Every structure is written in C-alpha cells, then in structure tokens.
Image 1 (tube, helix red, strand yellow):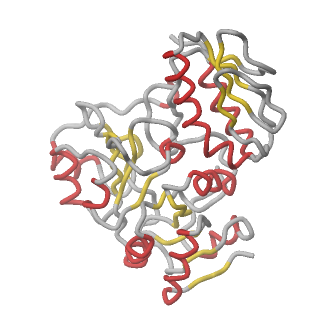
Image 2 (tube, helix red, strand yellow):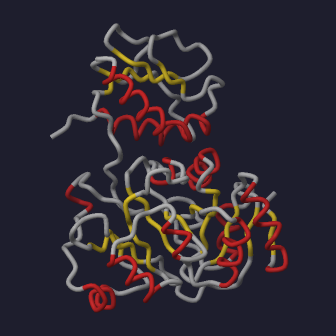
Length: 322
C-alpha cells in the first residue's frame, strides 16, 4: 500500500528514503521517483517500479550546488550556470569525482553524472532531511506521461512504491533541460525548462546535440539511447562455466567455481543482481586484464523483471565494437 503523505510528513518521507524505500516527491518540473542514490538496491528498485527496459542514467538531486560538487567536478561553465539557474529546471552532466558516493547503477556505469538542484520548497526540504543524493526519474511507468500531481503518481505506481509526498501540482510541467558539460563543447541532450538561448547567454554558443536515431553514440542523458560502460575484455553471453582464459560473471546459488568470479546474486535475487552489475563488470575487467585473461563469460540471467534490463545491458556490452 502506497502512503500518501503531506508536507507535515516530510520527516517520514526522509526516513523512508534513508531506509532504502522509494518515495515520489514534487519538483518544479514533474514528480520524481526518489531513491537513495548511494544505495544500489534502492536504485535498482526504481527501474523495477518503472518497468524501465534498460539502465538509463538517472538524475541525482541535491539541496544546493555545494552538495552536488562533492560528487561531480564542475568547471567554470557549470559554476556560472548553477549560480544563474539553480535551484531550477537545469540538469548538468559532469565528470564523477574520485570517491563519489553515488552508486554506479544510478549513472548507468558511466564516468559522468547528471545533477541538479530543484526549485521546489518541499523537494529542497526533503533533500536536506535525507542528507544524501536522491536519484529521481519521473514518477511514472516507463513510456507513460510524466506526472505533475500526486494523483498522477498513484495512478501509475500505487502499490509499487512506499509513499508519495503530495505538494500539489508542479508549476513547470516539463522535465528539466539536460546539458552535457563533460566535454569541450556544451551540448543540450534533452530540452526542458531552461531554454538553449538562456544557457548560451551565460556560457556562449552550444555544440550540436547528438541524434538518438543515429545509434548508441556517447549520449549521457535520461530519456535517450545510451552507450554505457563496456569492459575492455570481450563478453561471452549464455555461459555455463568459465574457460581457462575467462573470468566468470556468475548468477545464482549453483554457479560453478572459477579462479576469477563475481556472483551478481548468490540468492538469485534480480534486484541485488542489478545493483551489483556495473561494479562486477568493472572488477572482472580490471582483475581479468591484470591476470592476462582474454574474456568475461556471463551466465544467463532470467528474462523477467529486472532481468530484462540486466540482459539488455549485457547484450549492449557484448555487441561488436566499431
């Protein structure tokens, strides 16, 4: 049963988030489906609740720029834009700092992270009370219209999340603009509540945005086709065991022994497997290359629930490289 909370229940909402539960909350754009961004299983639960077909990067929300800069490295452009538009409907894609506490799953395994400070008093109060970054895509089932009221959230997610914090209707009603500042050129990856003209007035001309229809280019925004972290070692899918020159990405209680192995979930739990996927790929890749191995053998994961997204990610990682 999903709780419907009011502004006076903000401490309850914060406690639920800190406990790893999912809580929808209002921003000035749309309602977000919040999870503790440092908790991999909570982030995995977001994908499960939304029925998201692949692990797209999520936007991490902070109470102020100082908190955001602890997880990402801003340049002069980011600092200027934050001073002008935060709090507000602008998300900035920036390099993760070493030691960033946000779980890799929240950023889809990329070395970048999308961050923003929302301009809604209830959202800011919640973020301050939680004291951790909150990953939050729109609070709707994947592919459905983004919600701008608590009623919209409950229509799609009732029974799938712990609570919705009702702050009335969202004033903007469209998602935040996502601006990629991870490279030399600033590029809008998703138009939204801050216009390209307003951004260009602050930092100068913008580069051309990538075309999602062109295939898996280096796109870093929610709502677009993604090129996720891929290991340097080739990936072999459908493996039952690892060969002599392979590391093993295992799943389940009956996984065979291997000299170098990472079990996504010994219990066969798909949420746990999702939360450990990117860490496992990175560890096996680094350790495997250090030991002179040539491949990563990935055991089958059930094609249901979060297994669909896990398999989507593995197929992308195993695809031929240009």
